[in-house]
Amino acid sequence: MAATQKQRPGTMRLIDALQYRLPLAGVVSILHRASGMLMFLLMPFIIWMFDTSLSTEISYDQFTNAFVAGIGFLPGWFIKLVCLGLIWAYLHHFIAGVRHLWMDMTHSVSKEQGRSSAVVTLGSSLLLTAALGAKLFGLY
Figure 1 (cartoon, rainbow, N blue to C red):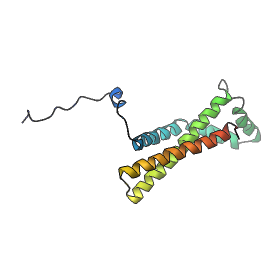
Figure 2 (figure 1 turned 120 degrees about the vertical axis):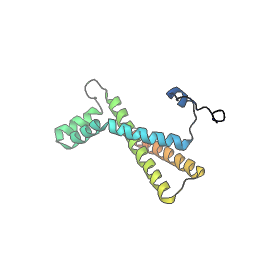
Figure 3 (figure 1 turned 90 degrees about the horizontal axis):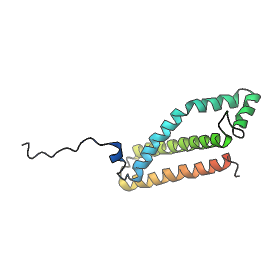
Figure 4 (figure 1 turned 90 degrees about the vertical axis):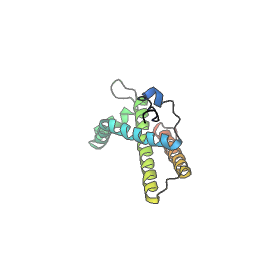
């Protein structure tokens, strides 16, 4: 019996896993997790922005000045870039969550539907991020 059993491959290293090409639905799923982690890790910054923008008029001026002059040694463009990352994380996480809810409600589990919903999710999150990023960086 032992001669007919196949040998199991050894443990997979991260380098080996990076060689696989994921379908677009897999990429959107991983980005959904990454966006959730990004929002969680930047939660202190989000709370600081919320608190500073609502406390007093002076703190609101400090908040708006952070996007122009920066905070401490961090320049203003870097603060805007972090906020742009947060905008993308929120939009992607929200849209991907709605995608998962839609798939659960309609029992849509075909490859074609998964790929098309992944394209819509990725495209709409990037398009909305670009629009809000243009507003954040003062392009319109």
